[in-house]
Image (tube, rainbow, N blue to C red; front, top):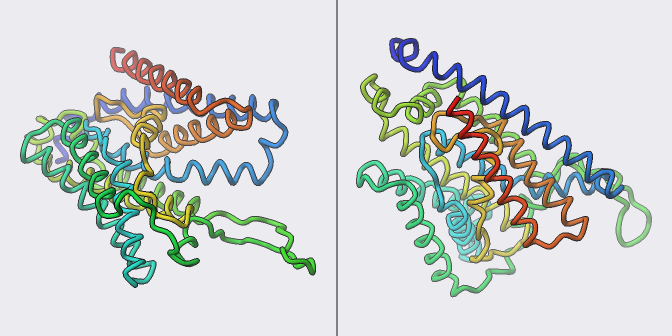
Length: 340
């Protein structure tokens, strides 16, 4: 393995890292520019409540983006995360309805997502089907199963405990005023934001400090050279897709908990937001390049952009157009970087 690190991956990986750092810096400057523009356009944009709203909106995109980044680094793609999110949330909701406590039910949801991801990895590595087609198939399967299990109807009356993960917060400070509603001194740090921070730190540690992370980078950089150097390429890919599915399941729990209702139609087009977050943050669709911090910046760019455009009264359709152009620009920059 030491021979591989020095002889095959060292020089090109260093060049890609330098270019990737430049890409991440440009994304960070873009994020700062967006915040500056929207804060001038609307004074309420810089309020604490709006900041927490942006964090909450970004949490689901960020969780999906982390899993997508792992897959993209291996040279693959996962189009199923939005549907897996819906299926996992559906399994969680049905489990709660069946009388299982909320925490074990949410674990079942995450396990469901991981199983879908593992199936994707199996189809891609063992059946030799391209990631685009394999995950497209899973996208249809997961959505269909979610709709079939629920009859396309939402699952409600899941209890207050079901909404704690999505709507609870840490360090919330309230002041009793003698009225019906207490005065909120500090709304606290939302649990989804804390969860996103923990997952991002663990994923970054995996990629940068563990052998599995080095194998993920090596697989995406040069699959054949990695295999000849002793890397278990198939196992690495299955591992990446399983993590992507598990994070989609976790995202499903967060989103459904925020709604306090399970919606089998949720998660439509979320896979594109996840891909956009990873690509904007510097992940290369060619594989071998990407990092979690860049993906977090990309996720916040999408979150800030949508929040600011909403506050400006721009329709959701125009927002999709703007984000689409940003993704095209990010991929174009990535192509130029690879050519150089």
